[in-house]
Image (cartoon, rainbow, N blue to C red; front, top):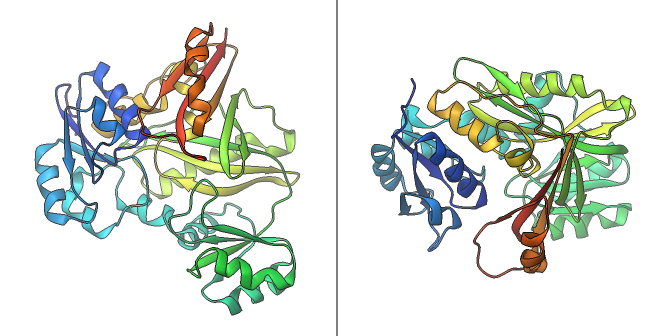
Length: 353
């Protein structure tokens, strides 16, 4: 099913990813209707309509579905069951969502496709955390199974007597314990896939994190040969196919001496793909719109020799005046409220021709 220009795309979630999806939909002739519980979601500033309701409000979701032609989502921490009210209008479907939002389920799925993850252990109580130390060795990291992002819901265990403190630090909630990965670099593969199974990827970016938050993405990626990027791309495409995913999906990898190791899946457009707005022939946001409305996918080649995207976190957004004045800098501000430590307020991309 192809939705012709003039149609309306529903986006669940009103954050910066929804905002950039709406901006990408407009040149193709589509309107956007945002669904979000917030009083002033930043995506609402550039949307034709906004429904304010809770994400688990099945009646509101059903009315929302009736008002749009197709529905997508901009983040994965959503209750899955109420989304059944959207029927076959939801792209990607709930399979990608349900798997990606639970780290234990996600790891079992990834391993089931033959891809590699760091050795791990399910943790449901403090005794499990202690057992994980014995099973995996040290150091290990505890990660909450749900709702963790940008380093939240994580705690390191570097000595055996830290297991209880780490369990307390993540709120004593179901978690996974992962063996520390001796990695040489971090990178991600961005995959776009249509209903018919057409698949395209972009140049692989190298990602630099600080405090669990993405600081910078660079293409072409300076990665060691042992990263085996072609293998990682094949793995990411295989994961998208196994999920019957529609739209853009990001797969984050560790580059190790023994090859690529999957860190996690994000079943949506992704921070490490923001550089594609100016740095690729088709941005990840336009590509996602194309996939969910049934248009052919666009070319993904670089528009220059290289590109680098830097996040503006917290009060770094106050640099906006100098960034606007900088030749070759492409500034994106998300229209959020007050800047807080760790809050992504915008990004800037520089493309070298």
